[in-house]
Length: 414
Image (cartoon, rainbow, N blue to C red; front, side, top):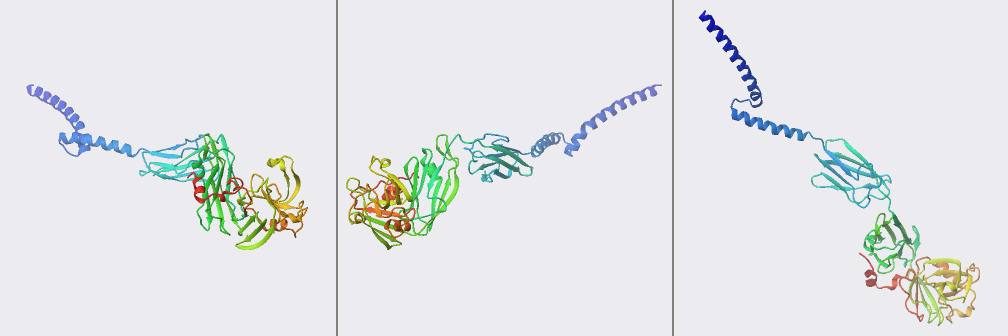
């Protein structure tokens, strides 16, 4: 009986220890699996190390996030700041920005390749598509449209594109809106020549900028005018709209010198005398400007009316032949059919123009007026001396050659 009782207790104790043993084993297994060792300190350290590795794995697995500014779908994005693309949790592999006008925006990455910035600002009024790809991830596509400027300006230029002009022709630009930031606007305009020569801009006013070399262009020069005025702010809130290149050529050299003391004009072509014509210049009350002048307009026939130049009703001639403009203020070299032939070469009788003998109707090829007109082109140089008047103002027509090179360069804003 006693033995039986003891045996029963032992079984119960054994059963209880067996449960503890199972619990103990269950508690030990994770540590054994994680650490591969039996020490309690080692198990604690390994548990801590295992948590850090798990966190790093989560971070490593985090997908890169690409952000584009302006944001996707923006309808009136600013065009005065660059486009940026940035990434978190990764690096950028490629960025391409394309406008609906066919233009592209180049840009650069930072050293870490976590940010890309366009080298130039986007154009106004343009829809852009940005394709940005982070390393190891799919490309992200964003579209936005820049707003249009509220007020704009353009520059009207002389000479005409693809034209051929004489050696005295400057590149003259007249702006439709006054320019306050002359430096920024001038930097957006370049004039280059082949063969190469230094070309400098000169501001005559806040609406006029001319370009010329130190001396006349060489015959046969090819000139390129590059306008990069689009989105250039000429003054607060007023932006340019042009982005274009135009070219024109310089033809042969023709320089005509009018001596109003001897009352004759000598025409030289490429350094050789082409013709000598008797002329009549301005009288004592209406002297002709002296100095270097450039032919800026040409008319086979035109009306000349004294009231347009402040001389009341002294004359009104509807069919002045072979008229070539020398100044904005109204000086021309032109044919004259109403004066006696004897006047030319002997008297100065005009109201300030230089006159040559001509015939009514502008079709007589034998007279001086016709011949000189026929030999001339826009941009040819006409020099007047001994006129009894002062030198013409450099901005009165295309006559900047009357400024010294130092004075010309002093008028540049850059």
